[in-house]
Structure formats: C-alpha cells, structure tokens
Length: 282
View (cartoon, helix red, strand yellow):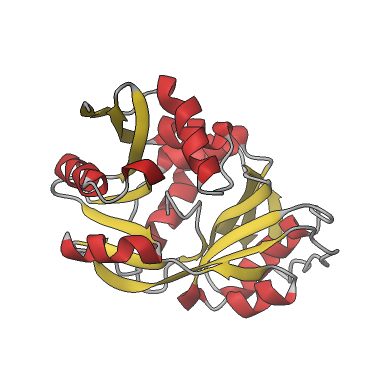
C-alpha cells in the first residue's frame, strides 16, 4: 500500500466531489472549484486513489481558515487525518488558524493545539416560504455592489474578523447571484451576498454594523428566494439565530469554532459578522 501526501490540484476535483457525496455533504463540483481557486490544499493518495483532502485560505498575513478536511471511510483510523493536518499547519506556520470542527474531529484538533471559541449554527430550509423584505429606514439606501466597492467592502470585512479578503470580495462581485450593499447616510455600512451552493443557495458573508442592518440585508435577499433551498451559516453569538429560525431557516448543525493561535477581536464600533462565507472558508 503506497500512501502519498501531495498538493491538491484541479485534476483531483472529480474525486474530491465524490468524497463529499459519500459524506452526504452538499458541495457541488463548482463549489470545490471555487474553494480551490481561492485557496490551496493537500491531498492524500493511496495507490492512485484520492482518500483525503484538506484546504486552507490565507486571509492576509496573520489569519487563515482551514476546512474541507476529509478522510475516506476506508482510510479511517490509520493516521491519515493527522498527517494531513500537520502538513497544513506546517504550511500555515505563523498564521492564526480558525476551523469549524465536527464532533468527530474535535479530539484531534484539540491535541494539535486548537481551542474552542464558540459555535456556528447552520440554518437551512428546503423550500423557503415567502419572506417579507424589510424596507430601508431614513438615511439608508440599498444597491448592487460594483467592482469599485471591493476596497470599501474589504475594509468592513476586515473590521469584523481581522481577515483580509479582497480576492474573495472581488470573486463574489464577479460571480455571485447578488451582492447587496447598504449605505447609511451616504457611507457603506454593510453588505451581504447570495450565491449558488450545494442544493440551492447560500447567503453569506453578511457584514453589518448591527442586527437591524443585518436583518434588512438578509430579508432583502430571502425575499427573492421563495420556494428555494436556502442555507446560511451564522456565529451563534451574532444574535441573528432567532430571527433566521422565524423565517423558516432552522438550525440543522452546530459545528464548534476552534482556533490555533490568537483569535481576532472585533474593532470597537466596527462592522460585525452575521453570516459566514461558508463553514469551510469562514
């Protein structure tokens, strides 16, 4: 038996897609394509067959996220996952690394120095009922994001969680179904994106100054998705969970936020994170 650890490349995506199907994860091949385009990964190959993956995304010089850590059932219990993670952590040496752990993975992550920092709630609905869009208040204006907004949206995003993600923001403006910008008294104060993902649509990231702004943005996006499968991943501490559940987006999973290194502290009076890009990318 010949096990080889090597960089993940585009030619692996068909087999990687099969791995997620076996786990009943919702990722399409296009979702894998986008994830690899924005990051980098490692693959474990045994006798020419892909049996494990892990991807990471470097969001600036200080912070990174780690996700899509998968080991095929036939390779479980053979140290494959540990080898993958050690290789990824070596690649990310010097970065503060965040991941969202399943119950099965928490023990290994803890042994490798990750500590629990909170919980992400995966909200979803198979067929979204009609959601009434909240209307902008006085001084507020909603509009579609433009290429020229990348710098401003990147700044808000960075305020919220310390990650520097201009490449992600530019990709969303280019490829997402819709990226909605909120202006408050003429200044950009928040944004939210909806894109194709998995069985239907995913909302995120959602960045705003406060909960009412986040609800305004998300309700506007949801109001156009009646009858669709919709998912949104939100930090349990954001306070948006009760409202999302009331719209029919119930919690179906709650992975643990774990960090190796120093967790980012939100900038005082700055923007906040109300919705993640994805559980993998953060």
